[in-house]
Image 1 (cartoon, helix red, strand yellow):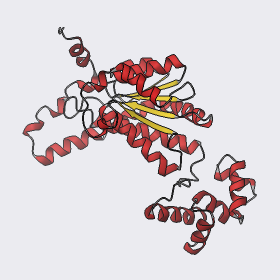
Image 2: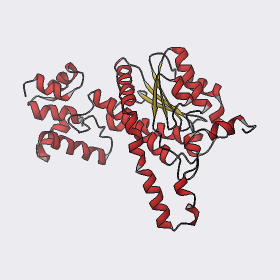
Image 3: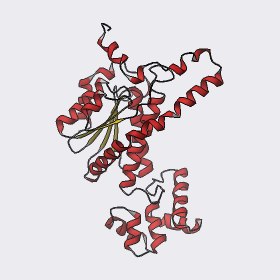
Image 4: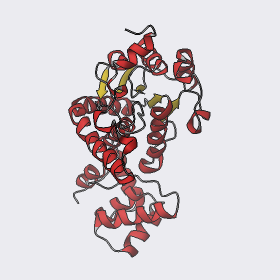
Length: 307
């Protein structure tokens, strides 16, 4: 037993233990090191599989929250916080949602995105202040992200969510974690020891990114943001995204480029409306009205028109 309590705590965290297969990694050739990393990375997706049940529960709670005008808020420190930011930012152009629908908070603020902010992950009061700064309330849902599952900043945030009566979700890479015990839903991907001991930006970071991708993507699918496997709500805000929107219209309707271009232009560059127009023979106003009547679900809207 060590005299430092934190040392004892870290000693019992799976992601902080030494990986027996990489003890001699500093003696290997470059290619052999890469092979070791690749072998370990292949375990990440498999480690997530046992958590799919809880991820499913989390998605249903997120969808319920968003449908009731609540927000999805990610919070984390260091790599975990940056992964939350990455997922939140990408939701905006991919699914054409408002800037305040999916929000990410990182310990230490914007400065921490590019550099380490000393002590930020230990500041419990800052977590509460950061949540208050975005007017976090009982109608929102909080996803606390921490590879170790014990980051004080994230623990405090999840405890605050519980106090307010908001639904909370924990994403970690260690079983029986502190954040898992605090949150309503515990998502754990036990990826095991890292190639470099304690470097949780590696397998743990990969697992967290995959889980956040699942939470946001599946939630948006359940919100009617897709048609088949197409991102029909993509925001055509630049040349590449306009070309993607054009291709999506063509793929969804089997129409030619000329037809898709005309429909997209008439629809104000909104792919979903353009697809509705082509599939049903309606104009932009009629297509938009049918979509609204069907809560934005394109399949339902097309079926309701008898197409």
